[in-house]
Every structure is written in structure tokens, then in C-alpha cells.
View 1 (cartoon, one colour):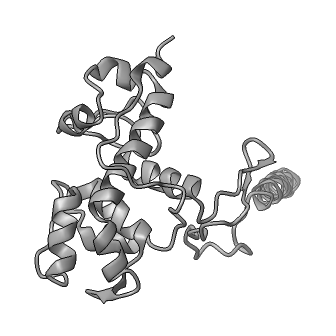
View 2: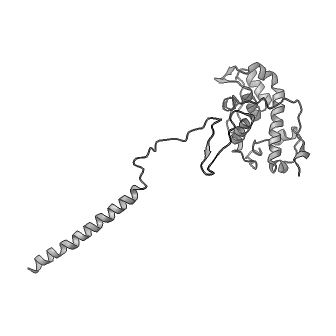
View 3: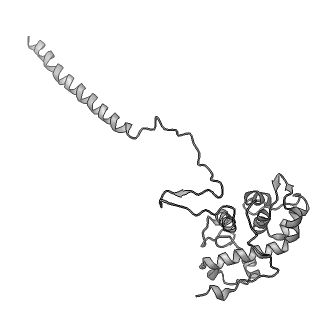
Length: 223
């Protein structure tokens, strides 16, 4: 009789434990379900936005400026490719600033103080325009001759030519165009003239006026 009582007395305890276990598990499952990804579409990649789209910066909760295919869009896209838009950037080969200028090019533009250049965003923007103006003057005939042509599968545009000249220098771009792509150039990271012609094609760079020997007015950018 004592044995039977013992058996039956265990049942409520066992049932209580089972109930507590299932209740705890159910509560846990309900909590986890709040974070479940079972019904979410996870097979996706980050979409690349087309130039000119007005996008929203979710961290700032405000629309970003629409640059499109304007000169501003051109220089900002190129600056982002070169340094992610970092005015203080200096790479392993000594190229400096947002647009990654070499000291030799800066000296051609009348800029001799690297520290001053790195610490002045306005000076860097002036250097970019001035260098583009110089390159456009050097390449003006090639722009007229090759714009609209297709070389190595890429349609040639003025902005593509100017971007490639920023990468490789106007002399290398002349060789590339006049050889119909046979004489190419790649920088130390493997980026080619063709790559820049494709990536930066189709921008409106009419704002850039060709000039033979332009110089940056350094005094205008000193405090």
C-alpha cells in the first residue's frame, strides 16, 4: 500500500514538472518568434543605385542631394572611387586627398605644399577643376574625334575621357584612343583606362572649360 501511494504521489509532481517545462518552452518559443526570420526574404544583395536617383539616408532621416549626371555628380563619383571622398587620404604610393593627386601633378597646377593641400578641401576642389581644365585642353581634338565611337566595347564620352586622364594622364589617354584601345594603361591597383571610360561615361562636363596652362590661385585658399 505504501508503494502504491508513493507511485501516485509522484504523478502530480511529474505532471507539474512537465507542465512547467512545456510552459517555459512555449514562452521561450513565443519570445524567439518575435525575432524569427522564417518568413523573411533573406536571399538578396545590396542594389546599386543609378546616378541621379534621389535616395534617403536612413541614419539622418533626410533626402540626399540629387547630383545626377552634372559636373558635381561627375566629380563626386570620381572622388568616391578614388578615396571614398576622404580629403585626408594618402595612399601607399603617396597619392593625396579626395582625388588622389600625385605631387608632380600638383606642382604643374602651382601647388607645392602637400600639408596645405591636404588640410584644405576647397583647395582640393580647385585643383580637381584646374587639372580637368588642363586635361580637356590637351585632349580637345581627341574628344572631338572619338566622342561617340566605341572602343573595346565602351562608348567614348567626354567625361569618360577626362576621368581616364585623371587616372592615367592625358598622354596615356591619347595613345589609347589613337590606337583604338591597343595601347592601354592600368594603374598599380589594376584599374584601366577602359574601366574609367565605362564607369564615368555620360556625365555633362561642359562646365569644365579647356585651358592651356591653368594654375590654382593659392592665395585665394589661405586664411
